[in-house]
Each structure stands twice: as structure tokens, then as C-alpha cells.
Amino acid sequence: MKTIINTNNAPAPIGPYNQAVATGNLIFVSGQIPMDAATGEIISSDVKAETKKVMENIGAILTEAGSDFDQIIKTSIFLTDMQSFAQVNEVYGSYFTANFPARETVQVSALPKGVNVEISVIALKS
Image 1 (cartoon, rainbow, N blue to C red):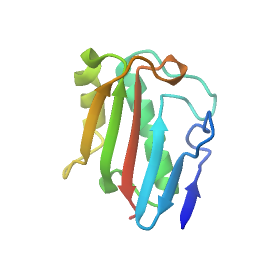
Image 2: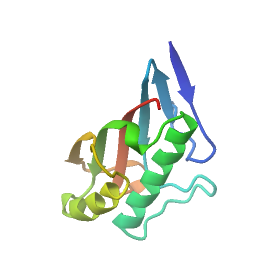
Image 3: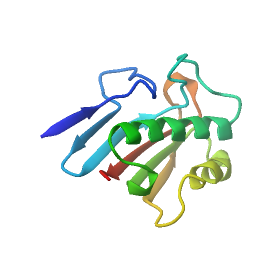
Image 4: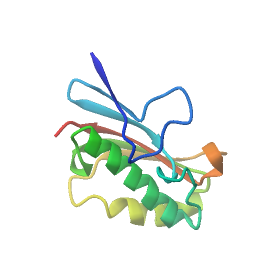
């Protein structure tokens, strides 16, 4: 059985998907981009600001699902330029204190809405 997770505190999906789906004790959060949920505007001042907004969106979805960053077991990071890896990693890392999740980071040719970073996660229910 699956449970659909959606919150007004993160951007609405821009396609045929949900913000997250929970099944059993797992939560699968769809890739989040740096979109402001209230305005629909893309945060694009720099890759650090983009990453911060992405992580805030993930946090809002996890909260709605009854979880948090400590429960993330896997992340996937997509970048349009691997040269921004260190900056993204700095912001991303500030959301974790210990027992970091498994992860991959890959460079892609383009992301939705022309953003530079997208992150998806798999987490446990708290």
C-alpha cells in the first residue's frame, strides 16, 4: 500500500508525479528544485542559494511525511556543472550532523526550469 505525500510548504509538482510517496516505513521524495512554494519563483542567485532552497523543500516534505533529515538513508544529487560540487556539498552537508546517508552525485546536461541542482531522497518514517 502506498500513501501520497503533498504539502503546500514545498512546490507543487510540475508534472504527473507527487512530492513524495510512502510505503511501509520508507518515504520516496521526488527530485526537488529551488522553487519557492509560495511564489513559484526559481531561486537562482547562486548555486548555494539554490541548494539551500532545495534542502528546505525536502525538509518541508519530510515534515509532512512525519520524518526529518536524520532519517534520510539515500540521496541523489543532480548538477548541471560538477564544478559547483564543493559549494553544493557545503550547503547539503550542513543539514546532517552524523550518520550521513548514502549518496551519488552526477552531472547532467540540463534540469527542469533551467536550474543548476536537483536532489531526491529516500528516508525512513520517524
